[in-house]
Image (cartoon, rainbow, N blue to C red; front, top):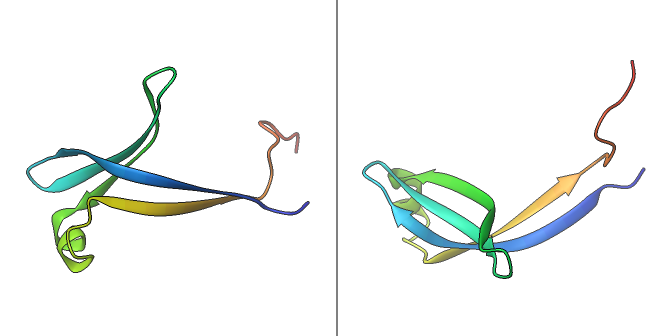
Length: 67
């Protein structure tokens, strides 16, 4: 089965003491769909971006597999 890939933009939700929380939000339901915490050292290495683009690949979409 071919991998399924989605790309989304995560924007700063909150700056914490040791990290920055980037999230993407479903505007209809106002729920965070994806949240990533990035450590401050990495945020600084990336140039303190206000948003990051993330790609996710899913190899299998089946929720449960029998072994």
